[in-house]
Image (cartoon, rainbow, N blue to C red; front, top):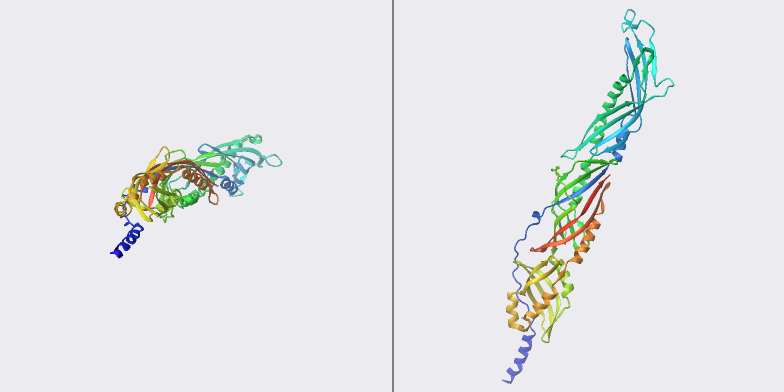
Length: 463
């Protein structure tokens, strides 16, 4: 009997120190809306610098050409035309350029021929010779003007159509000795040669490879962009459209419109890459206004909430517990599942469930319907009823309020830096993240999906 009285207190002491270890809850999740449904339009103004291409075009075109027509009777002539460098100018949707040039003309005239001595004919009288802009006389000046309409096909090929718009001789070429106005003949001959240049000009412009640059952009926009401690930004372009071309200061200006499904993930993803699709019909929009999902893994969020809970002391009627770790352990239907390990008057683990709720106005997240898990409740009632109270739940709920604004501001700055970089040689990106606001929250099996509205500007420059 005395032995029983001795052993009973020992049993009580051992029982009171027992570690609380409830059975882990069965995890489940209600599938949230898929990221593929969140498609937005990204509008990118693009500027293509054509200086190099136009210089190459200018250098490849003939600097001079000459021709002649020989007849026994009538007027025979020889001409030579020399052009100055082409002055490329841009007028809205057309490429317009003027060329200053000069020419010389040599003529001879025979009023009558016979073939008595020569089957090719012989002039019956001595030929009359004359010249214009030759034999020490300054070459006659002329101005030529072209316009080129440029478009882009759905397969990203330049389509060019060049027309001769002006042919103006500043110094008329009148041969008074046989009353012959050579200006008309010069126009006819030189103009025919200049019109042949139209094909050369079109070939040069159509050889400009814009598709290669856009393919590089398309590939780069599919790569993850590191955004500091927040993970990776995936733009996920789906389709592309292009506006009409506008020309200014030897540059082509246009707008790209892309359908994208952007998201941010705290973990790297292995996503399938797509090739540059054909162009679709264009619809104008300003900057970008995107619905973007942030996939925040529960592991990454655990480190975030631990800043508020690790080392937190709860005093419950003189009995204290100290939080060692507050971990997001997964989900149970529409609720987030927490695993809290602790020490102090009791040590062990408890599981709690709660619904993360977003206050859109303050951009803060708090826990609603916070409660102990069923298995935890059962064990606490048996071993530590003093812990089973609203007070500890209220304390946890009070500390489980998370201000998203600092994270959003930091993310915005980090993303803004990524939007200002070189995509490849000759292709650069310039952008600004203006606003990032959380709109909704969804629970996934491994991620908290934070649906945001992301506004900003992005430009591309291709040289």
